[in-house]
Image (cartoon, rainbow, N blue to C red; front, top):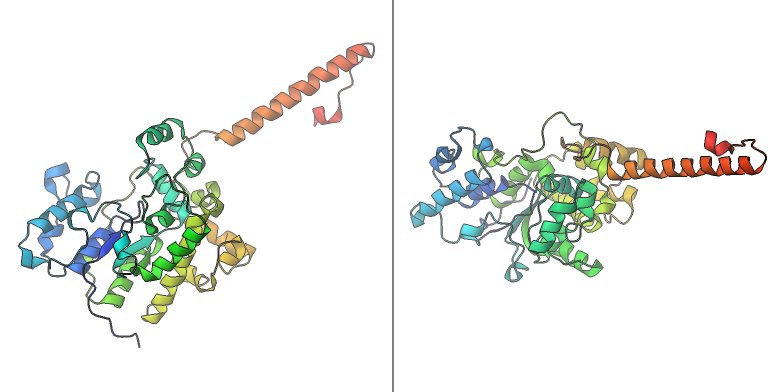
Length: 353
């Protein structure tokens, strides 16, 4: 049987990593303040004249919910429910005074998919304004975005107290510390890919009953239209494009699976290899899979995502132009050789293939 839940977690801090699930804020509100009236979570009709909260403007439903919470009488939600109060929906990194608190709550996400989602808006929280302008002016593909200085390593940086796109490059020691803080600093580790199960695990670990609004998607990435196949994130990005976040993500997966088992919750099939993960230093062993299984995971464990906004892609176009130039040089050289040999043209075989 699962162990009895410990005393209800108070004064919680939401480590809100960009593109890892804004909707989790509602789950945290329901968890920390179960006595909140349902009217708090009703759609904000004054913003967009729409009844569906998933169609409201950017952050509008979250901002209105928090505004309503703050307007309630003090005894409606205990004063020690949240560490952040008004700023709880911002992307604040883990503060120093919470490093050993175990009061943090966070969702983590496959870095390839997180980067793909972040690329839609060129998200760059914490980047210097000049660099942010350069990013918006020069980046055209998701791969260029992933390689832009400051973009990779977001989840590791936030665990180390830095903003997502800060000009800071964690080293190996920083990665080890970020992994340590998954247990030392966070009372809960969930996965965006398994959002509903993450909400259930939060309550299994810390008590309370999940509410219907805890499972509501209030911030879908609207720029990602349907009609794209699910292999794009794996096809255009590799774990090596964000190696530190890949290491942290697989450690979060391992912790998540371990806690599911400890609390009597079923482990999804796509997470079954996760407990064998100890390192992402090599790609096949990192998932506990052989090559064929790893390829299948990469092709199926991705949400629906779009192609990068480019017709051919910079790299294929450059390769095509290079071969065109090589072919022209070969033809010109052959004509020169032919003219010197009395007008007979001898084309090299590679120029005809």
